Image 1: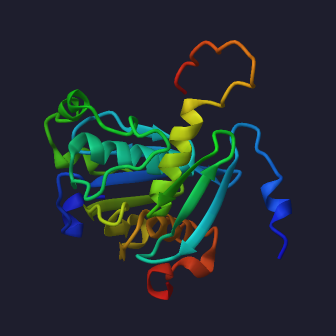
Image 2: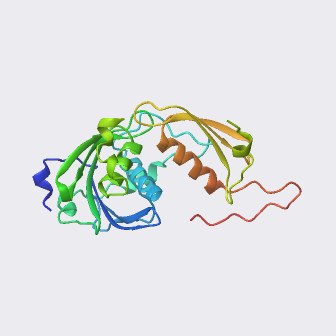
Image 3: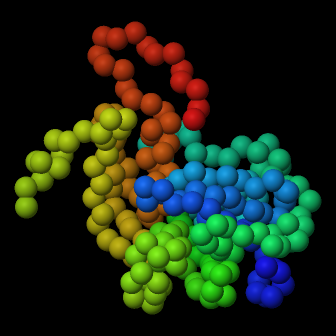
Length: 158
Length: 76
């Protein structure tokens, strides 16, 4: 898989390689452009959390809202952690990455309404879809991996 | 619809009562109540709800009344 064929370039683009599905939980790896070592995720919720952590580390895209918590002192990314996230960027780190059951290139363009908006490419089918929320992205991935076949067009139906 | 059956259940690690008031921007908005701490918070997206619940579970449960404070747990 050559990244250049999708004409999608962004500093925060990631490649989600879904390797396993067990008990309705996805697991796999997230590849990004700042490290040769992927970020692993063991659950579907974990995937979303790790992605949000990466976007906070890169501060890209910037949040338009602060994170609400039950504890007003929690939920802020320290400046030191944001600095640590800035390794040397190399788009080629995403080339030829493949998940065992599915591969998705995700570009989050905005973080508005306390969620994400952007585009996702299902690499195996070479199909691109836009998403208006993290929930919608999850539904698109879920539909693509065949768990809920009638959700493949979730972006149009909701 | 009888809500008492819903609110009388309790989870093993944390109990949250979620009221989704509307579904705009392809996501959910509403209120979540953390039963053990008797705290409520509004959420603007499913992502925000997830992070709030995760943050609450990281914080750990409230000790029963009269018990000595627990030692801090290692982060998972």
